[in-house]
Length: 113
Length: 108
Image (cartoon, rainbow over all chains, first blue to last red; front, side, top):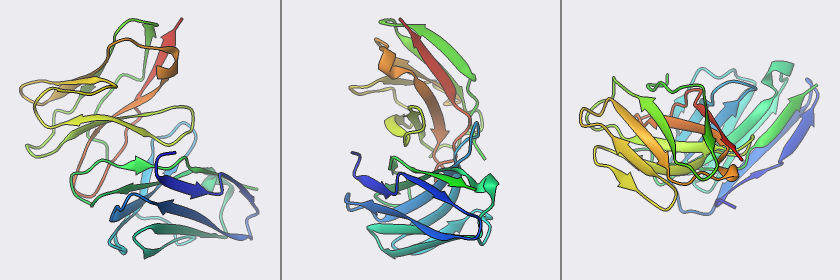
């Protein structure tokens, strides 16, 4: 247990479904991040939140919608996904968006059918 | 985009030191070098980081060259549980950008 908890651990969804991934951190950190890791590819930074404000959005399709209601919680809302969106989705947090290390959760393995 | 270059794979005998190299020739003066590892689809785990001095902790040592254009992560006594993908990352203001890393296999 790293202090960053992601649920669910596994998710299978159809292309017409709407689902949400949840991330929670109990480290008192002020920045949170979503990464996507597809098979055989590097981790891709998707979204960055600092003090609940989105500060980075790396050209992610609108079918992925993040939400950060407070500094401890981060959501990734999913709708009308494609099979190529199947991947490991990782959440991370850090004390701040500057020169600090990240603590990662264990990820949600998403399969779109 | 990642600012680092690493060999795609390495082997190391159990009990021996594993030396993982990383090139970061375009690193800026105030950018830190971080090392993480990822064991089979788990979340990446922090190992160590440094700016220009060599660093050591309970997991590993980090040797950074004087010109800061390259570094080496040293696992002093590799075990089978150290088999993982090791990422060398230059920390930029907007966050961590991961490359493809080095897949380290520790052989019994």
